[in-house]
Image (tube, rainbow, N blue to C red; front, side, top):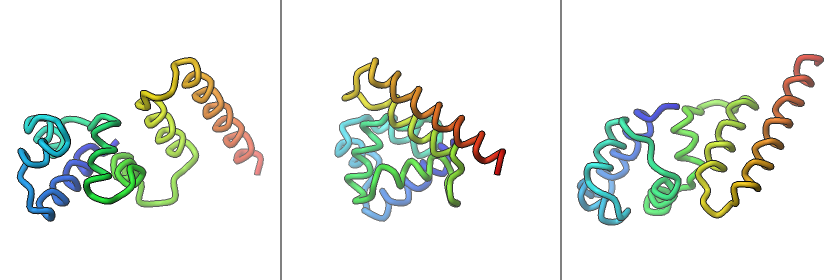
Length: 120
């Protein structure tokens, strides 16, 4: 994961919007120190904060996830699975049991993709 790249992007967008860290923190309902850590690549934003940042910057959460996972190319199945598992683990609206089921499906699909790719 490229937390530094994500932090740099967030800082650039914040500055583009002419906000200081404290103003961004207030809009996101977090502390200024939390924003500093994100911008300096010392902390990965939580799922909720990442969604709030995306909404504020008028972009999709997936775009920020792509930056976080450093995806500038067509993602390999393993990278796509990482992204899915990251979002799944962070989603508070999905029950633990449902998360386990979905995680198993994602892992099984990945294994099947690997087998198919090897035989091609």
